[in-house]
Length: 309
Image (tube, rainbow, N blue to C red; front, side, top):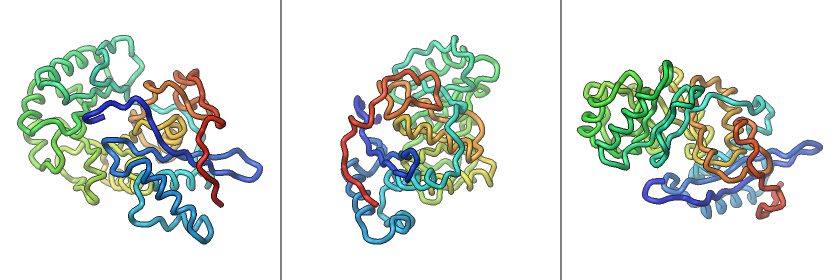
């Protein structure tokens, strides 16, 4: 994470109990460094909502304006699953994530349609070298996405873009600092950019900005309803959408896979975040077969916080 390393992921699970049927699960997991709300604040908000008077469906439909996006997501995801409209969890194409300290040997991975390389923490020359090394190993049809986490000035980005092979780069995610003007980006770099954090910080981002190549939508950090609105707006303008995880549990990654099918999203999605986890919660992950053998934390080991009807 920006400025620190997480060794433990914390969050809340909501169990939605149905008569004569298995429980449904949704998750509330703010991501330190990206979420404005803390886990304690999310816990307080969800309790306040669930402890109000009146029918539960009414409470869930009228969430207070100040409700954190992560709380919105947990409640909206539960409601959507309760409706029974989603398809089962199944594998979807994923963009393989290469973190800052990962080895760059991708030659053996012929099945991945694309790779996402984290850049921006090192010197520009180091990033250029790493990008060149990865692109040299790509096979026909494979592409590279770059994620700079707002690390470069426009001049630095222009220098980097001149030094790498444009043909293999699908887009650069959030290359410029917060609040930057992207109007001259396309004319100066010639490589598409993608917005991620900008979508959460700006209520009405200009999706007609020249060079905007994709929206990276994280439903946990955006809220499910707003994520759906952004995807609808992007679809109307012909802008590709990448559904992206925020290091949630296997339960939410399976839910995201169901959304990908339900929303008919095309191309590799940003759901390759589960490989660093040591355990799954409650059940093996269904949408990522290579991780189904991870140990599973059972229901009895979860901390119980209350029950509402």
